[in-house]
Image 1 (cartoon, rainbow, N blue to C red):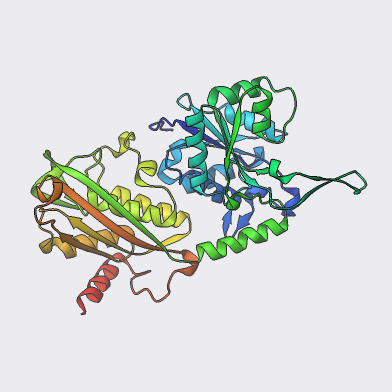
Image 2 (cartoon, rainbow, N blue to C red; image 1 turned 30 degrees about the vertical axis):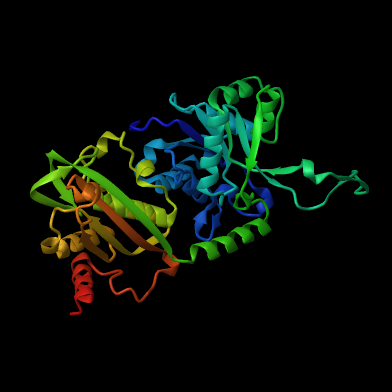
Amino acid sequence: MSRSVEPRVAVIVVAAGSGTRLGADLPKAFVEIAGTSVLGRALHAVFGMTEAAQAVIVAPAELVSAAESIAHGVAGVARDRVDVVAGGETRQASVAAGLAVIRPSVQIVLVHDAARALTPSALFDAVAAETTRLAHGVIPGLAVSDTIKRTDAAGDLLETVDRSELIAVQTPQGFPREHILAAYAGAREEFTDDAALVADGGFPVSVIDGDPLAFKITTPADRRRAEDLCATREGAPRIGIGTDTHAFDDAKELWLAGLHWPGEAGLAGHSDGDAVAHAITDALLAATGLGDIGSVFGTSDPQLDGAHGEVFLRGTRARLESAGFRIGNVSVQVIGNRPRFAARRAEAEALLEEFLGAPVSVSATTTDGLGFTGRGEGVTAIATALCFPVDNFPAANPVAGLPAGERNATSRARRLGE
């Protein structure tokens, strides 16, 4: 397996529980929520993080292969950042199994319950950033809004608890690597969460604001709530914007919009510098919440050295489709003095449509001599993408489902009014 990415952050996703309270035939992490497994949904958030993290999935021993298949489907080309291990008899033993495979480069460890499947990527980013800033443990939590009563074993009321001192704790919980490893090495008892274990080891832990979407799917009612949220959130079309800028490099050949431009100076970059393809990639990933070009196609990956735009676009399309999305259409504008796009516009659109399986429109403009593009120092591209959940993909889309040749001809005819 390639280890081209040296992650600074690892996320241990605990998916080894039986989930008996959910009343399903499968362990909870493998139950589907609106057509996608709980584990798959949790991992979409992990791979949507701003920072490229190692994902360690801890699964039941008999379902390690199934967990690996789910993880690789979500990760796509980032599968080299995935490790799957068998869990233990307890949650604590399962986390310990995950800690055993974190990579040497990892400095920050996040531990996340797969059952909190709708947790947004932004909460992972916030926990990782605050753990880095404070150099100690950080956990997300929500203020308790209900009145809390303490009762005895018989259910008789004893007292009202001051809720101003209470929070409902969530995951992911973040810790410096050395803190959580030391705490686990010295653990004397079982704790209900990692923050309690780390605090018992003598390390400080702070709280940041959590997110209502990070609720735990435990009961059938929780599952119905998650289904309803997904139906509402995922049924709507998604719009994303992406931009990319590259300076000219006289030592390289120019590749732009997937096309080779003989006689033109190339664009600087780890890949071929195709600003159009890169902007489209970011727009598609932004629309679907599946990360960005930097986290999905890292510049540290030697396999992307000199890679053409087709690699990014086909890889992004596969990532979207594995996550249950279809591309509606893409519009991209190129800003720069050269190359001249007019003569090759239809050719560029046809090629991009072949890569993406959706209509693409390309336009070009200049900045009237202003700025770095106006001075002829490079090219900028701005892309907008419209994506749909598969179940809500417009049946009337005249291009969807056609073979590439027919699709391109149909799309061009529609634009030209033929």
